[in-house]
Image: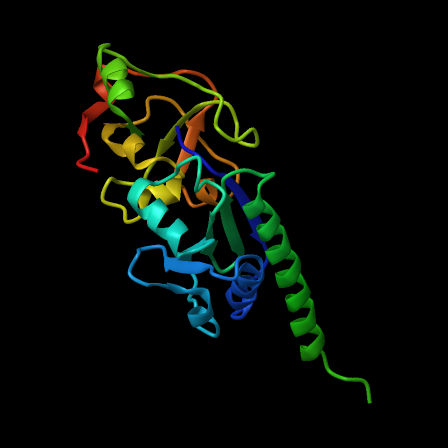
Length: 132
Length: 105
């Protein structure tokens, strides 16, 4: 059996989208910890701000360093299930995986999508030519 | 195509000449009922995190060529061609069986 629920957020991905999402993660989880998909890089969320995330790229965002250690040692458990979300950036889609559509991580993903949507509108508005 | 499982699942599936992957209700009610498979290999870094399973569920692997169509799951991992499912029990006869055994994970 394979677990997790996939949530796809389509639309052209902007350079700042990941930064917006990481800031939402820290607002929800002050001690959030971030790991790249290949496990080569794992740091507290504050150290990832303004980092460049190429597309495609993949990351895991944890509630805390303890959640990171638990997932790394055991994979999914009853205790850590709602303490990690996965994010994949593509050119035209941001994909999330959470434990359950009704859990804490799904609510954080909802906030992330709202903020990214808002940021994209702002970026579009700032790029429009101004009326004379 | 790969199916990962634990020791109990491994013994049950390999006990029959035709491997039968049983459709089940997934942990999340938002996911479709079915038998689940992945194109991820055991060497994939952070595999348990990518498929949201306990590490113990990665202990054994069945590898096969799909004898019938499998459906990509809705969302990102299906879109990326990583996770598929069959909405009903999925039998894999000998001609399609490639290998099975412990993964070392």
